[in-house]
Image (cartoon, rainbow, N blue to C red; front, side):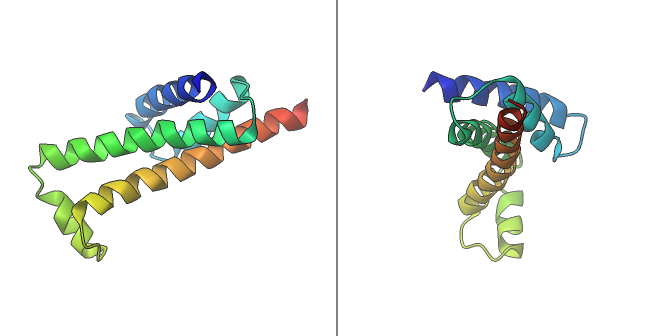
Amino acid sequence: MKSILYPALFIAIIGGALQLVLPWWIVVIAAALLSFIINAKSAFAAFLSGFLGIGALWFCYALFIHLKTGGILTPKVAAVLTLSNSFLLLIITALIGGLVAGMGALTGNLFRQMLR
C-alpha cells in the first residue's frame, strides 16, 4: 500500500506545483518523470499512483472552486455538458485527470523497464 500512496502523494505535490505556472498537461510529464525515477513494483502500481495522485488533486481543486463560487459555476457547466448532477462533473474531472496522469506514470514505468 505504501508503494502506491507515497508516489501518489509525491506526484500530486509536484504536479500541483507545476500546474500553477504551466499548462494542465504538465501532469503527464511530471507523472512520467516521477514514475521513471521512483521504481514501482509493477506497471499497475505505477498507473494507480498517477491516477490516485492527480485524480485526488483535481477532485479537491474542482471541489474548492465549486465551494468558492458558492455552487454557481458548477451547475452551469454541468448543464452545458448535459450532465444531470453537478457532482458528476467533479467526478468526471477527477477521472480525466487521473486517467491522463495514470497513463503518464505507466509510460514512465514502462520506459524504465525497457531501459533495464
